Image (cartoon, rainbow, N blue to C red; front, side):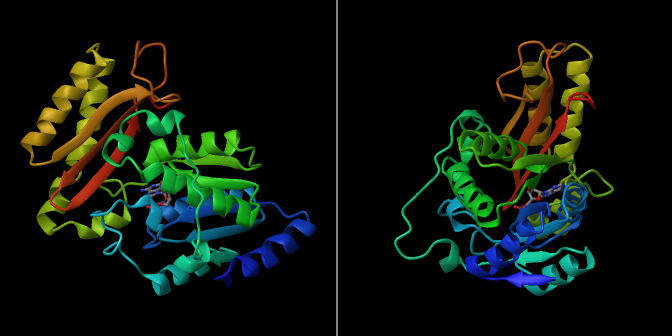
Length: 283
Ligand code: AMP
């Protein structure tokens, strides 16, 4: 496995692969890798000859007061996992390589980024994500990029951004990997105390309860309000729990005729958990 720490090193490899007509996939991550990340790498391998995994904790997507400084870091463990997974190149730039002195350009995203949900609680987040992801796409020239449905709104934002800026990359989504009790895997789960860890799958159960109620004929707003109330009774501080159109993130008009995603974010102690499920398997 190659390791690149400068854009020049990355381009040396990517350009050589392109000259050989090799298909390149990129899997952007912030490290502290778990099985969810590894599933994205497997998906990337299905689409490409060469797989790049970036590990970069992107400061511009964290607001002041968020967990940038405490975000879990395990570069050596990550490299070992990437080697075992058969990754071709680990792209691990230092912050100064991504944001050199004088950096002054931001990708400003609308559409799905401005549909509420995450944006209502993290208003600068998606511009930071879009800026770094645009850089990763342009640096690598990847043909394919794999993102997890775990960050469902992010997946739609990145897809829209690549289309709008004519970046020739196919943005592919991959399903959420869960622990055996339903908790969506996340690097941030490391923050949970033992007791919080026991409670944490209640978010996933609340999403499922809302789905079940909607499928039984309840209005989406009523079903999600009830699920939210249950979660609050369990000690969660709920940022949102909503049913949205799975393609546009618009409010659901008629759940029987449109694809629906139920999305939630809630805080348990100092940990912010996010999760989502499709209303039906095919949504
Ligand atoms: P992160 O390192 O948390 O920024 O995540 C990097 C990528 O992995 C994003 O595309 C996430 O959506 C994806 N991801 C994170 N957790 C999971 C999971 N449990 N299942 C599938 N994909 C995930």
